[in-house]
Amino acid sequence: MPLPSREGLVIIPSPLAVERVKVRGSVSKRDMERTLYLIAYDITNNRRLNRVRHFLKGYSTGGQKSVYECFLSDGELRYVKKKLERLIDKDEDRVHIFTMDGRSRTHALGIAVQPKDPEYFYVG
Image (cartoon, rainbow, N blue to C red):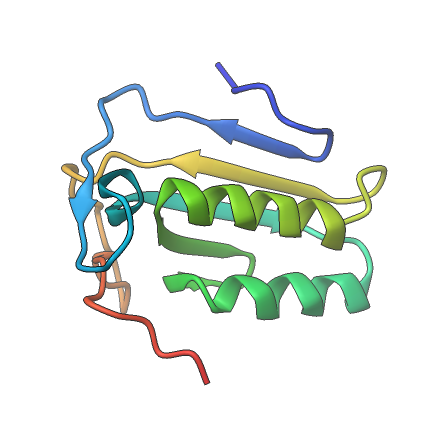
């Protein structure tokens, strides 16, 4: 059952409990926990597509084409949702944010790798 959200964005929680992964930092305990999300999009305009792709690559630990694996804290998820709402056209574009169960192992085939939360992100 999708969670309520603004038009154009849908959050679908995993049926299993979400495992929280603790990271280091000087923020509140709640903000130190990260959850794995799968963010998929279908953007109809090339300019908006490039902006969404560039933005999500900054939070992604993996993915391909229009699907990204992102470990996000609650604060980061709120920011990503707000930013995506500004980047997309709610009448033409689609973004789905799926909550994944961090305890589950994916079935990786071919050159795919298991998603994992890095100790840090390089922003440059």
